[in-house]
Image (cartoon, rainbow, N blue to C red; front, side, top):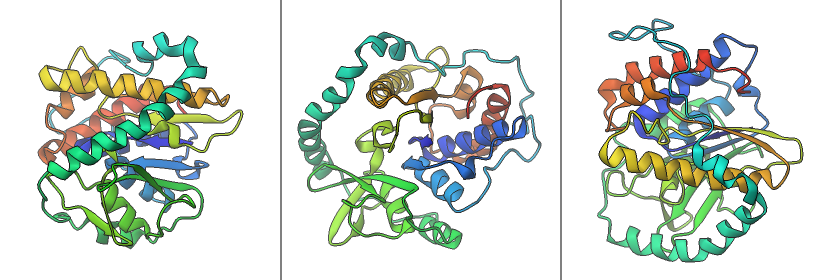
Length: 294
């Protein structure tokens, strides 16, 4: 089971590279995952995998245009410190998420109401996802936030409004103030990252399941600075709480964020598309170093 988090253009590139790196040194085929949960940038990667598209590695495997491969495993935050601290309280994690949800929805609705409208799908995202030909079949779940109520909506579940995969992915990627909200069935939706950057607790786990979560915003704290440092700390702590809620259902969860080298490659602006090649290459190198990630 694969959970792919928010992370902008560079987070998407890092996730694709990392999955390609793992596949390159193992027998893994992530297209065959039992289910996919995607949030924002992660919804693009999830939709592509679900449609049968292999993750994209670098043009020159093992390196980028200006960076050589580095030492193995440096600063790999695959087991965040917050996750270890929360391990004894797994039974309480799910309850904590349920209790905070109503208040969180109210706060998010108030905040989203104040954010100005952004541009509409400047990269032709809907058309590209539509070309893949995917559809909701019980394996793909895409997270967005309803602007008026602030509540989380998971497209692909029976409770969600009917939507095509391209519509849902566009809604999940509608960063407030950057991209225009997406209207589905008369309601406006914004980026699923406004609820959580990972949404691990959405995963439809069963006893004995294994969940791999890629958390692009939860990079190495040693390599992050300023606002990026605070975002990484929050992303890791939130993901750790969600992971404990899932573990309460007897599922194994592994969370992987960018290691030190990848965090530096991504830089402070995850929408800086000029770094795409370096982000893919950094993810690929990190993926090749990982073992037991499936």
